[in-house]
Length: 140
Ligand SMILES: [Zn+2]
Image (cartoon, rainbow, N blue to C red):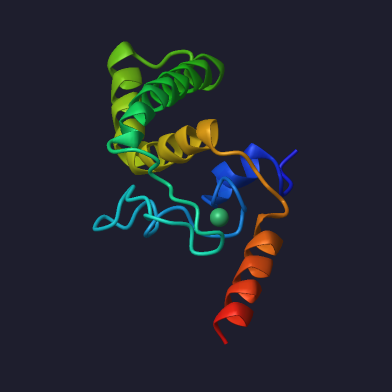
């Protein structure tokens, strides 16, 4: 289910949606100088991550969905574990969770959005290697 070749592998490991090898982001989700910055190209298969200008604006829909899922998860946990928690306690729990998890949600939304548009190709690195070998033989 989480193996290479599945969308979840790319999403959870922040890897290129096409080759599942190259890194998708310039830095870690909690590295504040590079937070959520997508690389221009995959370092392994050379896939251009932004296929058009402002491509990742659409990921805000995914951010909204993930935010709602977080809210529902916290609300269900509150009902199960702390049924006597006041509405203010619930609100503070949600606000703190959103603040702490927002860099992760932001990164997740971008890679989910990328996975909507790029498909895994298990042979892409072999094709690239063959092409680069052909390039060197024709040049040299
Ligand atoms: Zn790649």
